[in-house]
Image (tube, rainbow over all chains, first blue to last red; front, side, top):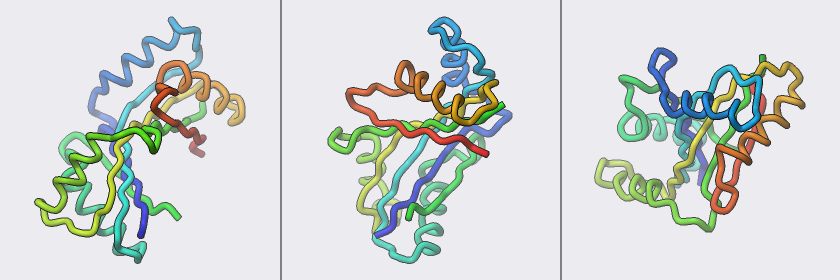
Length: 81
Length: 81
């Protein structure tokens, strides 16, 4: 069993209204000094595959197919030990 | 400037219908060997605070107040170098 984490974030040039809403709310809630907020998604996959390398390859294919929209999102993958 | 990443995931005992939907879709898409999927949120905060320790403290207060629902979600915080 291998646990793989896939982080999916909007590409930097894509507007992120959710993150912007949080950034705008922070001063009202008393939090100063936050210059930017981006919100994305995090997926934890449990794979039967025991080889880290093969698990990462499989997770990459899953992310490309299902978890991220490559037109507007970037993803990064790491195997959790 | 310090970049802090806040990961927010449902607590293990909370059902995660989005993750479940992905887990159910994977076999239909030709991906075998995935035994579990959990979906959560990832936030990237840019803080003016330059001390890692103080930035982490501030991000913790922001996460508790705004980013996570402590009844059903856990969060973890790390400073990106």
